[in-house]
Length: 309
Image 1 (cartoon, rainbow, N blue to C red):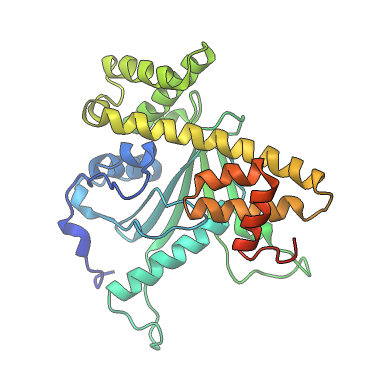
Image 2 (cartoon, helix red, strand yellow):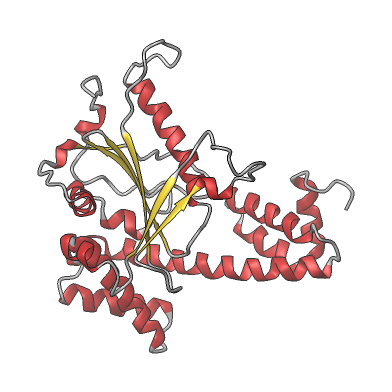
């Protein structure tokens, strides 16, 4: 990997908050390269010391399936893709395949390799880890494989591509050894657990987050982040919470509308419309599509989804 150029080395150790899109708390918590390197060391039982040895490769302008990647970076000869998820999504391997393809394309171009040359291009080894902290009970570690989604004409077939994802449960009480090795990850999990406990005690989401921030800051949990970015943290968590509740509502309505409109394709059609509206940041039209059939038909036509309704 001697040829690899560290063009991003000039970046500051702490990446600036990107105001052009909605960052998520996990990404903000590991914004400092030192914390990110500590997480990498904890996962791989390595001992890298120099944060400048870490090259951030997150594609800021790449949107796939409506979401941005949380963090991607190179350490040594390893290309790492880290995501946080509050739901167990079986499509993570497919999303990873799409994102890795974009990362490798950028990496090959930046390092001046010839994709059509006869010599094999050396590639950094891909690692894909998802940190899960949803409410559903999951084991400490789950491995998801892209090949599990393939429709096999013959059980003896070998797929041409594969993408493996390690899903690590970081809820309280899980993966204790990892949490002991990475203080920042433990703090992140404790902060989320504190918010959940406040919600269980009957607090509304705004108060639950505010109270959790006060408690954790006093206890030295994410205290540096909360002191520096308190407003941003509150806005992120409220947005994530509202988005999660909105998506739960949307899925219920999709099923109901599919039944009401009396056709098997009703649910899939609405799902496609809502995905396109969300990708275009048309939240108001999302609610119109769900609540108003006339508006829904108009939006179907606008996106060319159903010409004859």
